[in-house]
Image 1 (cartoon, rainbow, N blue to C red):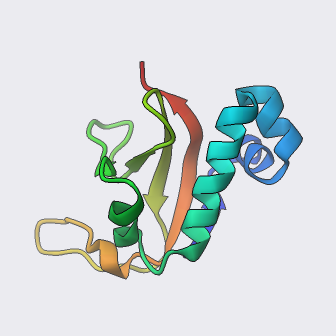
Image 2: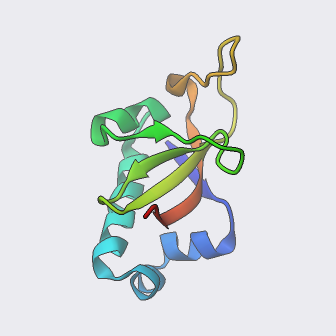
Image 3: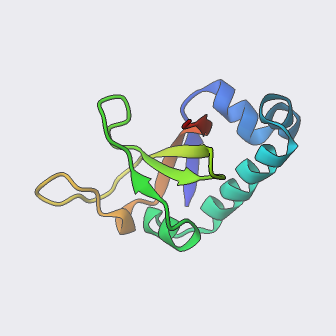
Length: 111
């Protein structure tokens, strides 16, 4: 699956290991890169359920249309479907048709 970044700061953290380590520490930087490798290997957004049973859509106006995947108990990576994909008559995204995501947050503290 393809991915892009919501802004340059996220792109820097996700493409430059030293920036990720400086901002989030070595352990979380490793988790970020592990998750990016997983996204690379996926066929669609539905594949997240195989690597993260806690993968779920987010609620609220600020996070509408976004999904979270756990990096650890405290930190999440937030992604949003991008490109062409299908949805049902209620607006629910068919995750099997999502072939590209935008990374909105590389490492979000949820606590």
